Image 1 (cartoon, rainbow, N blue to C red):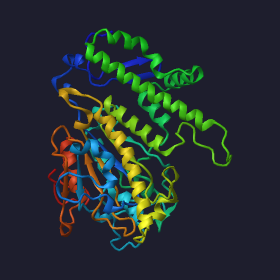
Image 2 (image 1 turned 45 degrees about the vertical axis):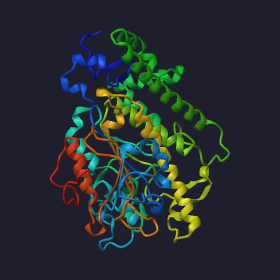
Image 3 (image 1 turned 90 degrees about the vertical axis):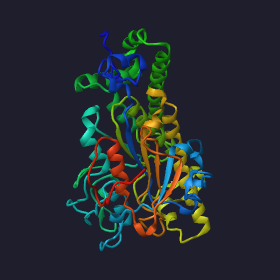
Image 4 (image 1 turned 120 degrees about the horizontal axis):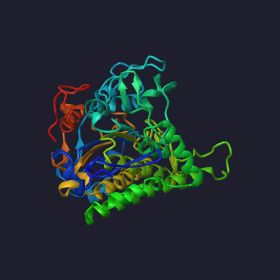
Length: 446
């Protein structure tokens, strides 16, 4: 084994490359800057707006008692900000008539007005994640990672004359080119931890499935050799990391077994590799995103929990009606209570992901949560009003101690502060500054 091991060392086996997390024992052989944990950014999206009364903290300033929907994040209260009053003007009609759901997702990361069409002539603009990825993406194996739960397409009429491309895609490489998200965790795992040679990758995949072996079985010998060079703390960290990779793979295999079991409704088979339960699916995809950040395979990710306008029922929390239908609540208290339950379910899954980040220790005594900037929110405010000001927005993580967190920040309604101003601030912290983006008017102070 080469004695000059760097933090970007990978364990290699047959068609397999398992990148390592940051290990202090290895940092001596790398450039000084490499021992500093990288910053990462992720954009997480929920559809149909929220019950704003149960979302918005009562007071501005330091976060004290959290409202009902944000209660699952109580343990991380000092590590995020609630932003009230940010606006997404390009999700408004602006003369284009109905179609707020399609515009909400299409404009959320672009700050551009999508062209109203359900044909092939779609147009909106490059998204914020891709602006960052095109600037710093060559520092990692994958410039960006696009994850999701609901499958999506780029054709058809999904919202009042708007193409399905707008309501199904969050990330856009260019004004007419959406980045398709991957919803199958097994495919994501294979992409992240497969080797570079397509022939070897196919051979390794077939062999693993034939003998039901873990990807780690092929790099076990390399891992044993590396372990001898590490200090006690790093030996433990390496073991914990490899255990987490194996756990994710085992959960994927279990999900595949469940999905392949006989179903009561033959015309509705469960997709192979995708967990049957919605919460399990979100959490597994979240785990994969965290693993990708931990191994520095990417520093940019997008992850919508559902397509915009989703009418998914939430029977697991005793909400049988569709989400979109309920969002048109007409101020009905019973419907608002059900919307609150759905919104709280989503923040519970978010809390799981944030907890994973909090539990991963990195250099300089920090955790992954200290070095990430995670935007969570929706392009709609109140789903009944279809308003695009007063957006529900969280910024989670400290961006390597460049963000003062633990606050509720309120922007005056009359100012109509663009959401894109927040993204300009994130661009600076990610090493991808821009003078403007979308409908921005300046860099937000965060």
